[in-house]
Image (cartoon, rainbow, N blue to C red; front, side, top):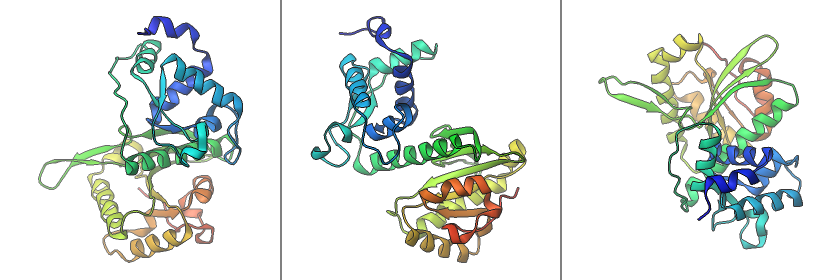
Length: 277
């Protein structure tokens, strides 16, 4: 059995970065890792050096790929979905002097995996957009760090579970965002219900006491038809101040984050609103 002491000398700085990214997002595709660590553009094929590096890390036993592939068997190694192994987790824990927790690799459900990868894709899009200089990202948290807790009406602990919590900065402002990644698998009523949960958290005042404002809530959806559908439901739900929310597609998300919610034009694929306290 390979030990941490045996594997650590074989890991380069980029190897550690790859392990850290997989740990952060739980699962990442070969394409996503190629974008994040090997200079590949979103629409580029996976470069050979990325496949070689991931194959080597797999051989060292610090990462593994799921049986399910994105694009099926014909996708080859470029369709792999990668996860951290227990050995990889222990190596990372030692490097960062963190607590070692046992990692058990398993095949997640298709729905869970698709949503996890979609959240990772949005997070990567945000980081890539920030690299262009139109805004900077001062904080980006995934579950469970993005989650918030407050007391419900009966005194019970209620947990709100955004997919992402993001803080962006421009020359003049810091903007706070809760981001929900929607894959058009839920009825609009479920989205309205989640927005009502945000409104109950807003009423607690916890976020406002911490940051001075309540984050804008952004639903990132797969297409314009879904934008229109959810926007109609949010605009007509009487208990939801729709100006506090936005619905947009991935290709317009960077524009929204750069302009801020108040300036985001509905013609770009989003719902106009504000980012009030």
